[in-house]
Amino acid sequence: MDFFKSKPGVTKKTILIIDDEEDFCHFVKLNLEQTGNFEVLTAVNGADGISMAKRYQPDLVLLDIIMPIMTGTQVAESLRNDKATKDIPIIFVTAIVKRGEVGARDYQFGGNYFVFKPVKLDELIKEIGAKIN
Amino acid sequence: MRRKNRFRLNFEKNGLIMIAVMMVAIYWVFDYLSAGHYLTRTMIVVLVIVYGVFTQTLINSRKAALDEKDRVHQRLIQSEKLAALGAVAAGVAHEVKNPLAIIVQGIEFLKTSLYNDERLLDVTYRIEKSVIRADTIVKGLLSFSRDISLKMEEMDVAPVIDEALSFVEDQIRKKDIHVKKRYESKLPQIVMDTHQIKQVFTNLFTNAIEAMSEGGILGIRTEPGKDNSDQTHVRIVVSDTGEGIPEDRIRKVFDPFFTTKNSDGNTGLGLSITKGIIDKHYGTIEIQSEPGRGSRVIIELPTGMV
Image 1 (cartoon, rainbow over the protein chains, first blue to last red):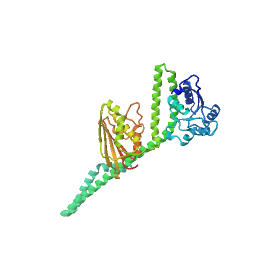
Image 2 (spheres, each protein chain N blue to C red):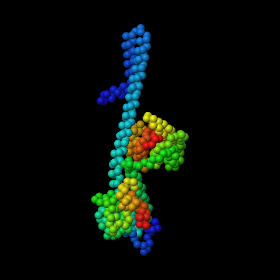
Image 3 (cartoon, rainbow over the protein chains, first blue to last red):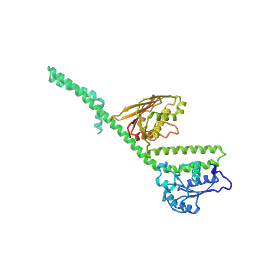
Image 4 (cartoon, rainbow over the protein chains, first blue to last red):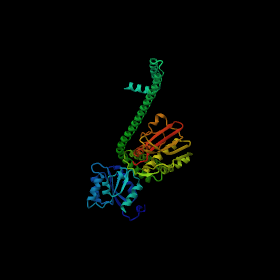
């Protein structure tokens, strides 16, 4: 995980977490920021997430799939259809259990990156590293 | 209705005695009427015997049909239970996994903050272990709700059994268990999902090993066979010389969450998952047990395309 070892002068990567579980957002933010390599923004619903993505242009979005009002799939679709956000990589962080159980549309809009809850920190960082690289 | 059932049960139980009494009565009446006619008397004896044999055969076949109906009914109840559980599990899984994810992330943070306090770190590791356990249970539950797409291939069953056996080698060695294998050499191949069937045997071996706390013999036998409709199948019998299962519990062993063990990591889902896999392969699974002497699991898997 050399890529994420704290190095003086290295710019922190900005991660946006969109998940209706506020505590999950909070802990992931604490954990990622503690590594010294990330600046983490959080949004607890899809609409806020989309506007934050447009405004802050994060390096990556961690996106829950099953959320009330606006699902992760819809959020991903909206981000992909907007010029300002279409190139931001997305990782779905979902409580849905297996790849096969995730709808085909999610692959289409989110690439092939999924992590499944409950995810461990090192696994999450590894996936983030792979996607940003 | 209940009276009728009682009569039927009574008749099945004492059928032979009742037939014997009836035969004697018929014989006595006809013999009285035809005194002196030897040919007629012989005919009557033959008829009475034929009548007795036919009646008993009818009773036996009726009893067998009732037993079969009872077995089918039990299987139906079992699959209904699993289907209901599957529907609940799918809904619950998402709700449970979210709080588990929060706990895991919380623990991760605590671990990095408590790096110099061994006692508190130990607490976090224990909590983490429990979360993983809860997650395993949820995953186990979900195997009922998933429409598992089987990757079927035609394979010999013996290498699959051996691979499952290799997963439990350590436990076998530790408990001083002797493995007795008897594989039929010319066994037809089975169309199966090897991964799933491997899970079946791993579950069965784990159960057998746990039942033999002070060592014993783990028997594995394979043989060809045919069912009632002439369909060829392969029969695999896994036996142990462990503590066995009491009669009142044996009917429940395939029920989800039913367990005869007290160990911590046991979810009570192993055998119901096993049964689910065998059902998907259109096979059958049966358990016979004698408390104090051991248990036998008999699996029959069809050899044709499924």
